[in-house]
Length: 134
Image 1 (tube, rainbow, N blue to C red):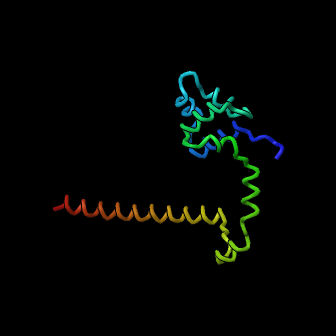
Image 2: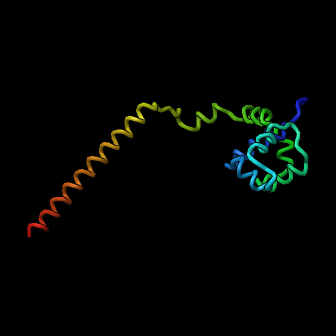
Image 3: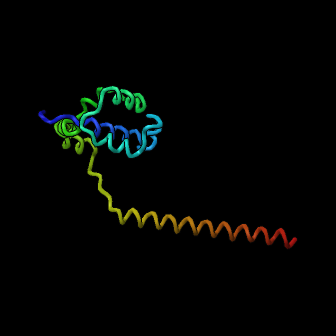
């Protein structure tokens, strides 16, 4: 626990989780902000409380989240409380798939779709020829 919590890194993590780009955050903070300035902010270990408050309002995240969130600690908690054996036992099996098999399956579905489209086109052409022949 000796290490300080990195405010800038936490701003970046929460911003990314919210799907907000640096440019958008800069725009919301005001004219004096730019993407480059946000990038520099996210590198700062300690950020002023007022600025954390402004960013928190934009991201709708409490200031305390930036000040107290420790990613390593969160990962340790999740790793220690997540019971892998129970999950596998309750799932009824493992979840494995072969990416090549999935691509092959998609390719076969695409070919079947093209064949159906060609068949429908031929049927439509036949109906049009009948209509024109009458």
